[in-house]
Structure formats: C-alpha cells, structure tokens
Length: 83
Image 1: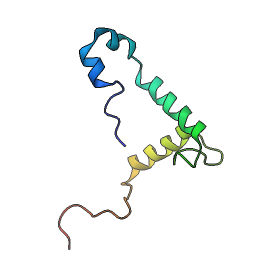
Image 2: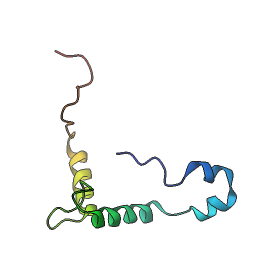
Image 3: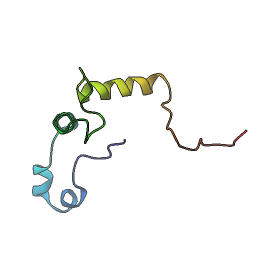
C-alpha cells in the first residue's frame, strides 16, 4: 500500500476554506486509520484482530520485515528475464 496524500485533491485545489478544514498531520490520519481497523476487526480488515497485537503493531512488524528483506507476493510474476 502506498499512501499518496491525506486530502481530497479536488476540494483542496479549488477552495481555500477546504484547504484549511482538511489539514491534519499524517500521524493523526494514520492513528485514525489504525483505530478504525482495530474497531472493524479481522473479518473486515486483514491488519486487525491478531491476538495480542494492534493494527499499529502489525504495521510496524510489516515495515520492519520489509526493511530487512523483500516480501514475496504470492501468485505474482517475477520481474525481469526468466532463466
């Protein structure tokens, strides 16, 4: 997942009032995302509902794993020439 922006681009680009209303730090948006995932539970959100872990802890774990080595994408074609 890549988060490209935290504002609705059309109102933000056409209205000064919308720009002021729509401001929020990335941290605030992420915290709200994590809270909503936790509330939705594992049947609706894959990051939520793992015993003893919050969504934020699962994301931290995933990011640490990505820092250490590539994460395979099952059922995907590998890029580049095949040997």
